Length: 162
Ligand code: ADP
Image 1 (cartoon, protein in one colour):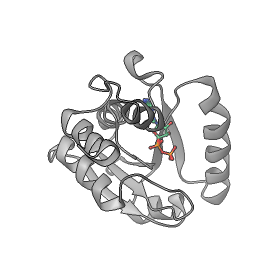
Image 2 (cartoon, rainbow, N blue to C red):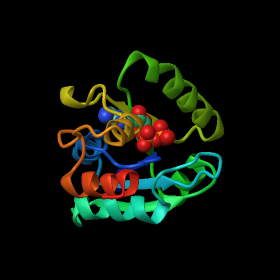
Image 3 (cartoon, helix red, strand yellow):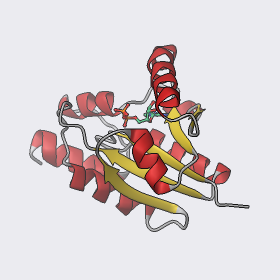
Image 4 (cartoon, rainbow, N blue to C red):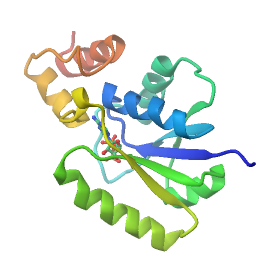
């Protein structure tokens, strides 16, 4: 049988424990998981694409079957180029549903051969988002239960200059 490959696209600005949880759980379902930072000029990010790739790679530590890259343009086009049969997305709260559903339907229209697989977060990460992590750090709060140590340090350096 051919390899089962999933593409996990996202902003990852920065990657959180919610993202890593999804990556490892997706790896149980697929032979290869390609984590891809979406290059989106329309969105302002705190970390550069290179920094986000570096953070993902540092934590994933060459786990077999998990790769990290970036892409621009249509997600489904990149998925096809990678030989992926599925896109991984996360469904946290009800508010994610409408957005993820419209994304999945539009991607299905663009490329019917690629399916979207939505995974629910593990319970501790249900209400965790990169945006809220940045806000908590900006106001001096503790995010050690939400991001790996190295990423917490990078956030502090970037947002608080320390
Ligand atoms: P995007 O800009 O594509 O939404 P994100 O990096 O915010 O990029 O998220 C990428 C994907 O990961 C999305 O499908 C999002 O719902 C999912 N995700 C983000 N945080 C979590 C989490 N804590 N648990 C599960 N899925 C998550």
